[in-house]
Amino acid sequence: MFSLMQAARLESLHLARDPDSGLQAIIAIHNSHLGPALGGCRYLAYPDEQAALDDAVRLARGMSYKAALAGLPFGGGKSVILRPAHIPSRAQLFEAFGRMIDSLGGAYITAVDSGTSSADMDCIAQTTSFVTSTTAAGDPSPHTALGVFAGIRASALDRLGSDDLQGLRVAVQGLGQVGYALAELLVAAGAELYVSDLDSGRVQLAVDELQARPVAAEALLATPCDILAPCALGAVLNPATVAQLRCAVVAGAANNQLSSLEVADALERRGILHAPDYVINSGGLIHVALTYQGAGAAAVTAHLSRIGGRLSEIYAHAKADKRAPARVAEALAEQLLYAR
Ligand code: NAD
Image 1 (spheres, rainbow, N blue to C red):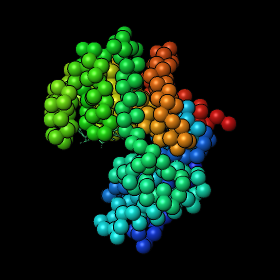
Image 2 (cartoon, protein in one colour):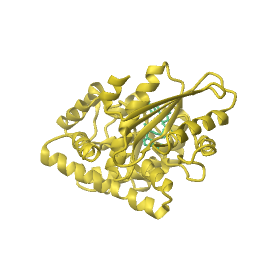
Image 3 (cartoon, rainbow, N blue to C red):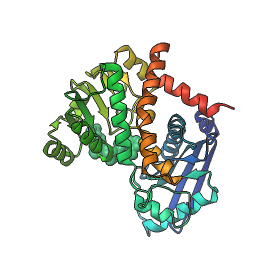
Image 4 (cartoon, rainbow, N blue to C red):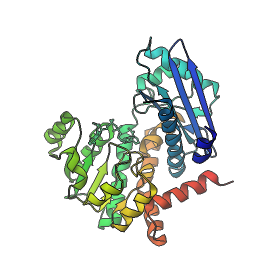
């Protein structure tokens, strides 16, 4: 346990169980140098307890880096609730989780993530005030899509010489909450869309509404295009898939796109520009953080609009240092997180 914490430079780990509601939860706080830890709550059926713990720790670390580079006064944390086969009441479970969060006195603030909804956040809000992305606060996904769109334009400018997406071929993997909203923005900007999703209904919707060209899920990464936007899975970029890519830029919403940092070097060697995921997909976190602080829509929009500029700065550093953008982003985040 402590060696895992040490390897991830985790500040603290909190476990709780509540037999009445069936709650078994883990809260991982990675770094609170810049502020209280903010990060979503996953509610998933993990294969075992170690898998749940690893997920919480890995994701908490990512949140610290994301908040730091987004210039937010928050640290990084994440929680996971192990989804049991049966529970007496979902509301009771999330209320019990709210009591766990409350016992930390504001060290951790939660939000929606895989397997949770704004309605679950409303239940958590019954027992703690350290919660955001409730139904009143709104869905962060459209804000993530807006940030990714701005990041795609900045990446196109850097690698293709213009941020005008008119006529560019963009391949979007995953048409979920973020991917579909991004596809709508891309089509409105004149891009030619290639799409895949395991859910054929989502693909058909994009074909009907956005005149997208459908691509089989297994063929999407090798589709010739200008920009590939992974908006589905983690670890989509690994030594095997990098060899297949036929694009100039990879810029999308998915978290933890690289199976390892060495893959960023492989992309660089292939001349493919990769937008570091926790920079380009920070729009949702920006929305969640600013609404938690009571900021209005104009402040969120202004903060979101800085994502493109931040990526351009990272690309400029990367070029000057002859390093992959992901390596530059990591070094910049660590300067902020560990400055004393
Ligand atoms: P989602 O679950 O709504 O959508 C994911 C979509 O990907 C689903 O439609 C699913 O069918 C599809 N998919 C899964 N495997 C696929 C495959 N092999 N090929 C093609 N499609 C596949 O999730 P989301 O909220 O849209 O998030 C997408 C990604 O962005 C995730 O990696 C998530 O962690 C990340 N992200 C989301 C947000 C947010 O605000 N929702 C913020 C930051 C990062």
